[in-house]
Length: 288
Ligand SMILES: O=C(O)CCC(=O)C(=O)O
Image 1 (cartoon, rainbow, N blue to C red):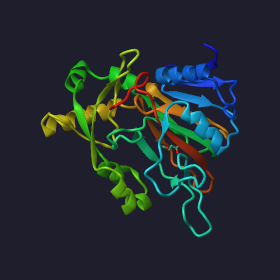
Image 2 (tube, protein in one colour):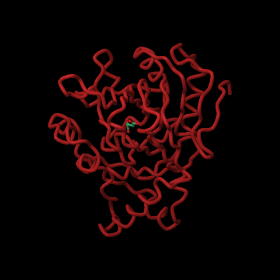
Image 3 (cartoon, rainbow, N blue to C red):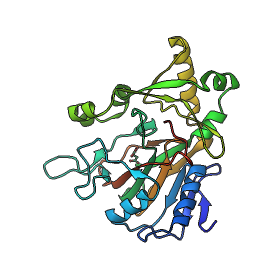
Image 4 (cartoon, protein in one colour):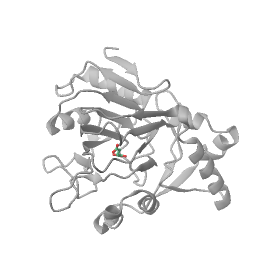
């Protein structure tokens, strides 16, 4: 263990100290960070000053980078970088995606058959009074379930629906975006309990805005189980709340966490750069 870290929360998440992500990292450090991510679900790096080349290099150390299905909000310099922002161009168009609305608990890309499960946000312009992002640990969510529910969902698969996500989640401009709808799959099927390949610990994989039903059980039983899973997916003592500071990088594993965002004060500028990474299956919980 070379890196200096402090806990973000009593039960999960680490802040990594004394590291400059604008410099290339050697393989041992990258491997240690990857292990920390697998164990903790969320890593925070403060006070970073990064160009897009730095972001691409740093994120690329953890796996293949995804080029998004979005055509809007994509960096003109690096197609692997997308902008998450409430800023507008003078003509009223959005600089980035996701506007200033609240985002409910979700896990990224669960509607895809091969989700890229690593996500990274770099806060360039942030507000300290709104737009906090929260992460919920899904190992703890699984462990909190009644034994009969664990038995009922172990080994089962779920149907994850993009239509459900569009309905519950996206702002109007994306909901009506035909291009996006055509490029995104309709449904994907995934196990709803994932196993960490190193520790064997089980994580709930039941993104509540996208999971439509559990396969192989009657509809009423599936509805009952989904209601229990939703109740357990973000219990208060398994949630880390991140109030952003300029220069923060947050790196999270969607295979063992959910996240949500508070609404953003429309009068305050918020601009972030986002990267998406195909994390490796020998270290991380993957649904495929
Ligand atoms: O804007 C945020 O804080 C979170 C955005 C988000 O949910 C995402 O990038 O998946």
